[in-house]
Image (cartoon, rainbow, N blue to C red; front, side):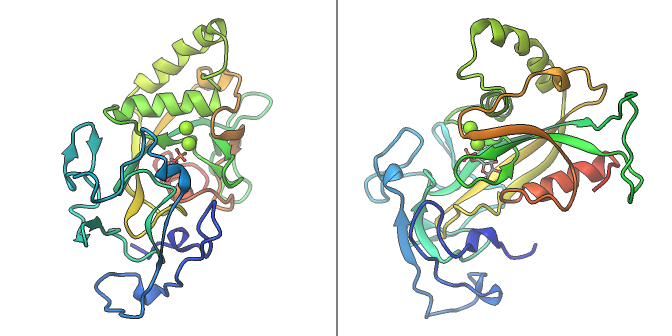
Length: 279
Ligand code: RP5
Ligand code: MG
Ligand code: MG
């Protein structure tokens, strides 16, 4: 796979920290590079020991490369190496050590629900793209509050949580504002939502995410699953409402030219190919 790029963004998000500049040919750990002297950075929020974060290495004994109690410390990328008791990013150098904004040492597991429908014209027929002549998919996209980039409404898998639950919970929180709406409003949507998320879905991707928060010792991994409302009369009819870490939410045309957060554009490409849609 191509070397990670967003994991080497010059400034570490939410900080004034500049990453050590890592050229493409020095990303892999197998390249000996004695001059490499990255700064260590851990965000103060993470240092405050919230429930979702690990303590400092040395003050606890995590079991890496295994399911450690309720925390899954295994990687989809295979067994990761350790250096000075700290896990090493399986995709190589990022220009910063420590955990940055991430809570876990090693893999931080997320889930990405990609909810799609066909774009239709006034008569209800599928819209074909003028260039590719293929039908156009739309997906539920949120604008992240942290960086302002459009993204899939994904989120972290809580300790002990099943990924299938995370997918539905994060979609509900970020795209339907489930944490805030009234019980009556909740009841209205819950039927359609649970039906859609109970359908098998198409597992789009499982593995490393090229996320700007990644460091040499902590990184994002995800399971991205596509839930498709083929008839357009299930979730397509629900009122979208941004919530939690989402500032805006809307149906967005699936198209290669639309920039998305982290590796999300790659996930959408896989969905478009699978559904023979425009990309
Ligand atoms: C990305 O960060 C994942 O693909 C997922 O969409 C997201 C999870 O982090 P939060 O949205 O909880 O910040 O790497
Ligand atoms: Mg969330
Ligand atoms: Mg999120």
